[in-house]
Length: 586
Image 1 (cartoon, one colour):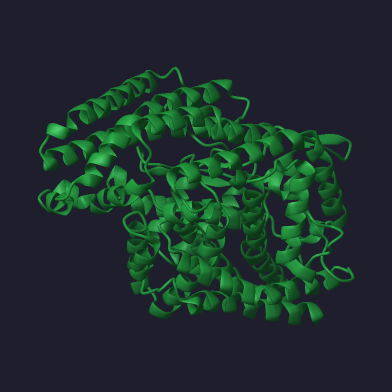
Image 2 (cartoon, rainbow, N blue to C red; image 1 turned 120 degrees about the vertical axis):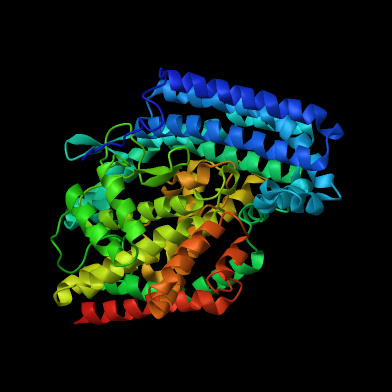
């Protein structure tokens, strides 16, 4: 079994003749979209729309294949200068599509007979949602020249600042125990069973950040200023408004979600104080013990153990999911272990050209690491469903992106709790699940508050590293309340989380809460409906690329604008918190 992912499904390297051939195909498609824009005014509407779909498909296919390869190479080794250079070249080439795409979008949006033209063509009917969104998005589109300029400037703007943060954090060597470890390995020690190790790792982590904090602070300030400028130019009321619009999600849904989270925040603080007391602390929990394991579970997983464990669980839900997970382990889909230069955390990347995915993780053998694998492979399963759509109908929005991943987590934890032997093991599993839930509720809420304050303050000031750390600490206090020890927070969470540094995607935080609670609602329906629910679930996942999030949820009979739905998901967590408190008290 490979320990690093196999990218040969894309190319053997940047010198692979297939890479050059696909780059030539991309260049040809870019030229074709420009030619189409030049002659569009004289074309019959159905002919124009079909040509637009076919040419856009070609650009999407070849661009995604080339960019995915370069991105995966860079993520595995941020010192890969060839990958970084290639990404810059590809982004530069794609910037040439900005003007013709803007012109074509304006023409398509202005077609009075758009709905009638769609009805005349099976190809256009298949892409009705895409074409309707072009008309809907027209009010936020700039002129051809402005779109071209923005696309070109973004390469040396937000994207460059994003790459800087990724490079600095992935290559940061942390002094620890007489040697040095990558930042990702140090952060993994937060889950160590030895309290002295957790505390020492936390202190080493915080001590390392000042070496890069000023440069990363410049990155964050620059990105958020660009975001604000773009919103003003395009006519969005705010970056949050832009994020919700891009997510195809109503503000009514977000308000219902946040209101339910705020109501249930006290029960999570109760959990944190109970954990602090059990670990011998007075008052709130210090940050370094936030992920401290509890109960007794000494089980460690090899990669092979993790595969067999997950396949065994998923077989009870759906054979397609179980078979995909087995293939992911056995066929080189996963890059498992931390190493110098590799980015931290974990992610899934769909590879549409191959109908597969690639998963990066920093595996250390704990049950939590296995749950992380389940989470990322949930994204892969979501990819698998939307790959059944055409290339232009495969992109799903930000909120639903965390649905299948968290559903996998719920499947794993539910089965693990059912099989728990004794109170100690049950406590350990409960703690792991509640800790993860606390992250998607309390921590995500703190990130939402922090990003809101950064965007608001960036309108009038440049925030240096100390100011950003103060805002981060303030947001953590509001979210965690008396659940955490205020003298031992994490002021540098703004620095190590890459979600803040995506210029095109603000507020990549509330989707985790959305996905976590939406998944629990879906799991409740599965428990009620049994095997009959599975096909509904897969159909809903596929629909996420074809409809707004509220409409996709209706496939499963769920109204996301109702606060009660979100409260039901939170109550399922609250029940486990109450059991946890009883167990630690005993």
